[in-house]
Image (cartoon, rainbow, N blue to C red; front, side, top):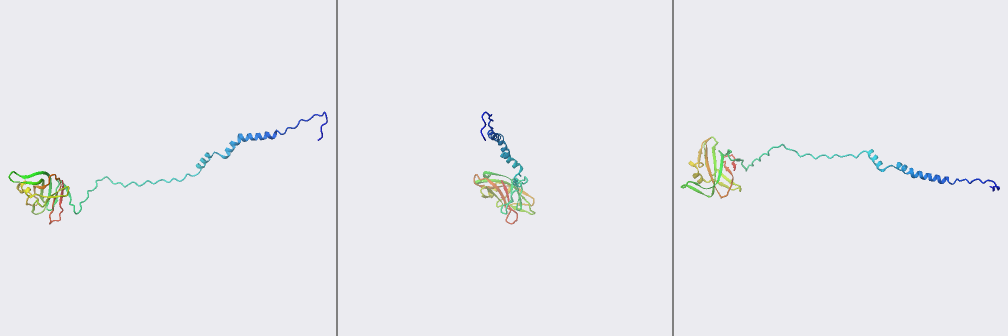
Length: 224
């Protein structure tokens, strides 16, 4: 282009360079103002995403623990008393009738600590002390039976020691010789004291009535 002639008006220069920087600034402003929220909206909140995902997915199966079976219950009842073995005869209490061989016995009571039996003229003294058992004897067979306390009635203590009846004390301690070779008819009974000579301080725990050698009946034991 040629130079303008002298005196001609000069046209102002065209200012187009401002447009590009302005557009860049506007774009940067938009990015700074709105781009962050847009990015967040596009990406999403991790917590929200996890929650929605967890809510949308099926829950894991729950295995119910089976309760342990309850122990079996038994009705309230008293335990049955153990049956005696073949070597252990049945036991009874004082005042209860018991069968021993041909006779039925009742022990009414026992007293220990007796030093002598009899009167001032006729008596016998114990080596230790006498224990006196007050018993009744009844013939429960159909014929006459001979009862003798010595050899038929014995006493035991807690240590398992056995004491025989003292015949001499039985004679001095009973009227009419009760308990000494008594012939008792069927249905009849006698009452007698049976004496046992035991060490001092001995406590008797039972009295046994021998059923005899010629019978299938069991011995009878009375617990004191």
